[in-house]
Length: 261
Ligand code: PGA
Image: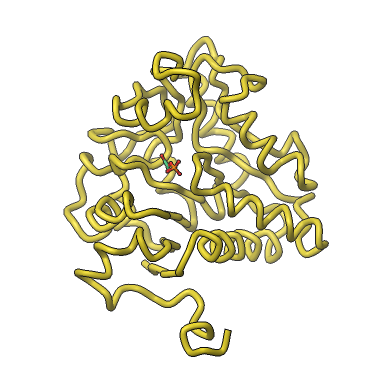
C-alpha cells in the first residue's frame, strides 16, 4: 500500500487525477471505477481541464460507478447519474453508452446487482477504482457490518450517512433510505484502488481503516488485503497516521518540500 501525503485539497485532486489519467493514457479501453461525494469533485475538475487542453482522450474509456440511490431517476438532481453527468461526463469525450451506474429505479434490486457485476466482468474488470471514505469507514455505500464478500446489492443507509448526505437535500427526510452499491467483493476485484481523503474529520477513520484490525465494522479495512492500493490524502486527513506511523507517508510533491517546486 502507498499513502501519498499532500498539503491541500488542490494537490490531492491533482495527484489522484494524474493517476487516473495515466491509466486512461496507457490503455485505450480502460475501465475506470468512479465515485461520487464531495471529495472527488476536484479530481473531476482536473480531468476536465486536462481533456480541454488536449492531454487526455476518453473516447475509448469505460466507466462504472460505485453506487446509486434507490428511487431516484437519472434526471433527479441528487442522483449520482446526474452528479456524474454534471461534474464529469458532459465535459469530456467519454461515450455516454460507455458510462455505467447502477439503476436506482430497478424493480428488482437483486437482479440489478447481478446484471451490474456481470457487466463489469464483461468489460474485463475495473482497472482503477476511485474511492472516497465515509466517517463510518464506508466505501461506496457499504456500511459497517456488511459482508466482505458481497457483490453489488441493495443496502439500507446508515443513520450517520443519511445525516452526512442531508446537506445535499432539502431536508433529512428527503434523503433516500436505500441504495444499490457495488459490494466489497466487487470493489476488491478492481485491479487497482485509489482512495482519496480530505479534512481532519477523516483522520481517525483513515488510521483505523489502514492500521487497525480488518473487520466488517470498518468496511474500508478490507482494503488492507488488496494488493494494489494507493491513498492520496491531504495533511489534515493524515493527522492520525502521521502521529502514529509517519514512516508510512510518502511525500506527494517532493520537489516542493525540497524548495524546488
Ligand atoms: P465525501 O463522502 O467525499 O462527501 O466526504 C465520502 C463518502 O461518503 O464516501
